[in-house]
Structure formats: structure tokens, C-alpha cells
Image (cartoon, rainbow, N blue to C red; front, side, top):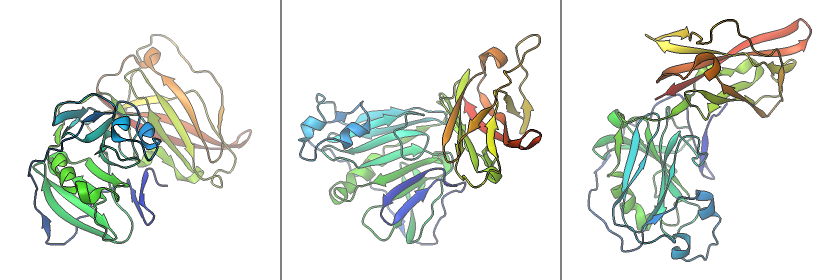
Length: 340
């Protein structure tokens, strides 16, 4: 099951897998380009979604798409998240959109920044934090470079003029830049893109919010089920059940209201003690998970566990493949998350 896929061209896909960047054996290297560049046009701060930009008429003038007043050159753009804060310096003539965790604006990754030249539509560079990154497909050439003072792996498919991804390494590990529909403007703006990426900074000491972390324990392949979390906070989250193989269950998939939270301590999972005094219980109800669909359960654990401290946790959930009374199979799945 593919968790995240970005279609970069008709012949290419980049997938988020449980691997790192596969380095090539090529001796070639790309020299860092630090030549300054300032474009004499307007800096555009788009606070609305990228969808509005993509839906703009093709003959729209740049000042209509980017209608905000003139801003100072080389503006610092920041986006925080649960793994650290990303920042870039954008010159005049470039637009951007910040994408926090759970914003549903990103094609890949957990949080990040879109940036693109003023006046273009439906194309951008996506700079994101991804908790696990890998690539698949044929026709991949990889090279190495030093960008923003850190080593990076640059990947290009099918020998086209633009790179498809840059995967940063070492202290910037987890940060990835991806191109999307940049063919029409890449020749004119490639140098500026690299100059912008050379201004990248990543501060792993500044962390905020919570986020779901994919792990194999979140899947039950025998019943074609995968669970995820969104809107993670110290007091609750939304648990999503994704049934991706309608032929896998032998009966009807069901879940109840009961769940358990575990905390990671000294590399061991421990059941989190409840803060509620006296007896407690959950409603004895069963909810169906329809085949080939997604359903959600809203969790508010403040009444049972209180407000969670920063740390790494997982939710343990029981799923039944129910065929009839006393005729079912039981599966345990786990949704891991981190809080800061």
C-alpha cells in the first residue's frame, strides 16, 4: 500500500517509503551556487490556499494574482512543526504559501513551504519535512551537492532539465525539496531556485505541535486496513481507519470506543496510567468500517489520561473481522504520534 504519492510527470512518481535516499555511485558533484540575485518585481505573500492560485485564469496579470503591497526584498519565510522550524529567504518576484501540519495543502510530507515565481499557476517547489523518504521508478540519476551548507542528494528522472527532488542529509535529514509542474519556467528561474534553497535554515530545537508517525504496526494487511491520526494535540486526535482491500476481510470490520494509550520510555512501550479516579468504562458499541473507504473516530482523552506531556506515544486499537456471533478474528493496530 502506498502511503503518499506525488505525480511529477506522466512517467514518474515519487513515493514516501521507509527508506533513506539511495545514493548513486556517480563521482559527479554539483557545486554550490551562492551568487546573489534580486528580481525587480513584487514579493507576494499569499495567505490563501494554493488552490485559489491554481484556479486563477491563465491570462490573469501577475499583479492580480499577487495583489498584496510591495514587501521588502529577501523576506524570511518560516514554518514550524513537530520536528523543527524551516525558514527560507525569498527575493522580490517570488510568491509563497506556508503549510502547517494537517493543513492538507501539501502533496507530500508533514509540513513545509510552497514557493514559486510570480505569475505562474499550478506549479511550485514544495519544501517539506518528511519523517521517512524514499524513491521508486526507473530512469533515475542521482548526484550529490552541498546546499545551505549541508550535503544533499539530487535526483532527476528521465534526463529532463529540472531535478525532481533534493533530499537533505546529516543535520538537515528529513528535509526534502520537490518540483511540481515547473517545466514552463525552469530555464528562466533555475538559478534563483538554487539561490533560495541556499538560504534554507532548519532549527531542530524549536519544535511545536503533534503529528502522526507511520509505522508497520499501523497496518493489518490480512484485513486490508491502515490507521492514521490527524489533528493531534495533547488532549485528543482524530483516528482514521482506511480500508484499502475490499477482498481481504472475511466478514465485516468493526471497532469500538475502547482504546489504550502507550508511552515510549527507555525504548520500551508502557501503558499510560489513567488519571481518572475510581471505575470507568467505554460505551459497548460497535462501528462498521466499510470496504474501500475511510471512516473516523474522534478521540478526546483528557477525561481519562489528562493533558499529555511532550513525548512519543501510540494508540492501541482493537479491530474485529466479524462473521457472526462467536465467529470473528481479532487484530491489534497501533497509531504512533509525537507531541512537543
